[in-house]
Image (tube, rainbow, N blue to C red; front, side, top):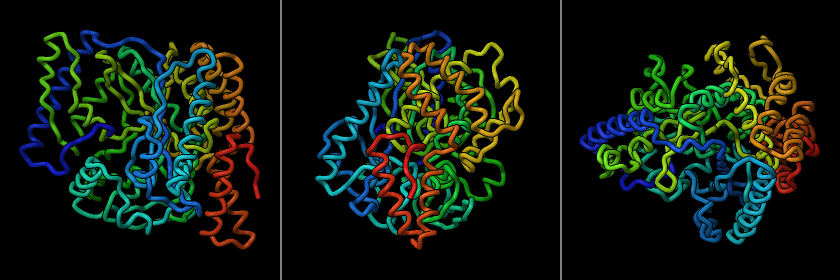
Length: 491
C-alpha cells in the first residue's frame, strides 16, 4: 500500500485490463521461482512502526502534514489518518550488537521527530489504538492527503454498497455503523520483515502463523476503542471489520475477508500470491506500461507492479512480499501481528523473540505444523488477541497450555538458540529475551497495564473518559522513559 496511484476511480474496462495484467504477472512470478531468479540471502530484517499524533491534552492531533514537513526525513511517511505517521527503519542483519544499535537508532529518530512535532503542536505516541480516540474525531477532514487512501475508501465502500458495521464484544461491547473506513486508521502496528530464500519461504510463513497467538499474548496493547474496553488486542478485529468489503450475506456464504489469517498451511510462496489472485477482486486496479514477459525475456527483472499492488490490498497477518533492490528480486515474510509500543525497547524485545523462534521453528526437521491443525493456529491467534495475558493455547506436546507457560518452557529457549544462529551477541540476547521472560513471569503487557490503570483511576472516582486521558498521560511518560512496560508504576 506504500505505492502511489494516480487515480481514485476506475472504469469497468480498467478493471478487466488489470485482472488480465495481474494474471500475467502471476505467470511471470511463477516462472521466476522455477528458474531461481531470486536473491537467496537470508536474515536481512526490516521494521516499520505506525505512530499516533496527539495534542498537549492527549487528543488526536490531525497534523501529520505539518509534522512531516518539519521532520523532513523520508524514513517518516503518511498513514491513513491525519493523526498517524509511520517510521521505516533501514534493513539490517541481526548479528552482533545490531539489535541494540536498532534500539538506539529508533530512539534517536523518535526523539528528534518528537522535538520537531512539538513545533507543530503535536506529540508522538506509540500504542496499538489511541485510547483517547472517539468517533467524533473521525468525522470531517480526518483522512491524509493521498489519492490512494481516497481510492481505497471508495473501493471498500463500493464493494460493500452499504456503511461499515463494527460489532466487537469483550468485557464491554461496541456496536456502531460508520460511512467511512476511518476506524481502520485507529489500528497502529509494528511490521517485522525477514528476507528468506524462496525455497524456504513456506516453512517461515507456516512458522510465523504458529507464532501469531503467542506474539499477541506477549505484546497485546490495544484494549480500548472509542472509550470501550474490548479485546486485549482489539486492533486485529477492528482492522478486519473496518476494511471488510463483504456484505453480511457474503460473510454468511463464507467469502474470505481482505484481512485474513488464511485457511491452510502452504508449500510455496506461490500458494499465497495465487490465492490472492483467485479469491480477491481488485480494490485499486491501476495498470502500468511494463511488459513483464518481455522484461524477463530480455534478462531484466520485472517489477510486477500490478501483482504487488494487489498483494498490498490483501492484509494477511503474515504477508508474502515480492520486491526488488538494486535490480535484484527477493522475497520477504512481513509479520503484521503486533501493535505499536509500548516502548522502543519492548518493540525490539518482541522482534528478538519473533526472529529467534521463527528461524528455529522453520528449520525443524519434523515441523510443528505437521502435528497441529491450521484451525488450531487460527484459534490461538484469536485467543491471544481476545484474552492477552489470560490466553490459553493448544500446542503439540502440551495440549491446552497458558501462554506464559508455553513461552517460558518452550518458545523462549527456542528464541535464544535462534538468536545464537543469527550471530546475536549473548549480552544483546540476554537483554531483550530477559524482558520477554520478565513479562511472562509477571503476566504483564501493555494491554494489562492500560486496563489496570484505568480501573484503579475509576475506583478513585475518575470518569472513564478522564481515566483514559490520565492513563494516556502516564503511558506517554512510560513510553519516553524507554523502560519496559512490565516495570511501569501503577497509580
